[in-house]
Image (cartoon, rainbow, N blue to C red; front, side, top):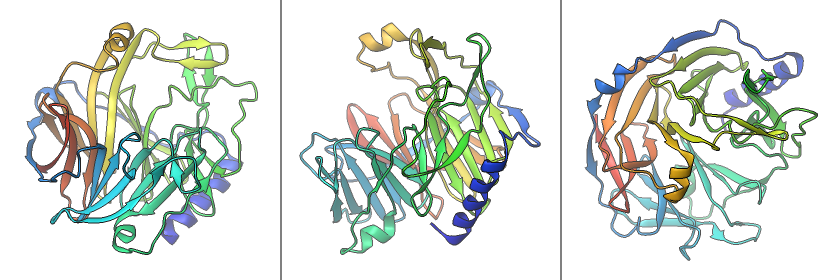
Length: 356
């Protein structure tokens, strides 16, 4: 991570020690529901990938490097790196297992130039690295960092420090819970998150984060409520975006844990990618009965989805409609501004380049 980001986040850590949750000059805007109806159809051109995606769970594009994440039971390396122009296999990494350089579970996150690979709380280790540099250096190896805390979303800073989505932040009047805490906290790898009498909302604080070192902004997006929050590098909330739908998960408290999938399942912003100028977020917008969802083995009927393009001030620049035949699995944007969608179509993982 570059020096500017390191310094800014060290400042953030200091600010958090001294302050409570900050909502300074929070600008709130709403996306109208008609935005989806007026969206431009997104033209997608399939990228030939040969057999590279035969066992893929997802894939990402970083300039001329295609990263393929394979299913854990595929008997292949969990990560493969290809030249996207020639489909030459450049490198492989991470085998399935319990060894020091192995993972049983692969949870990838696309952070601009970096790929973040988490083994989940059961393994308590992750790696985060510059993809192009790693793929083009045949001698480089991935370095794993062990962590002791539990959180759905984390971003590796430096010196084993993490930007973490606070699992105890949760406000709900119906349940009588008022935990209006900071969205983000800074943790050392060895820190543990203890409830100290608080309600655990880790299962409902789902979504993702994006970090823009050039604009010195952080974005949090929710996968269950149609909400996006933009923060500055002092972790002040400066912009909240709601809509285009009024998704309302039904929350249930079981002892000291909050759940949100007991009656309905809501799907908001499901995938994202970004560069220094724009954020691209895949949006679903459905509310589904939980029993129906489980009875169908968590497989949903085909439906249209959308890709929202925002600038880093939170303004909607464009909205694109994606055919219901293509289920978005991941998004990527290159330094040249080329947008790629990894989609499931007819049961197969395929890569498409968007013609914007």
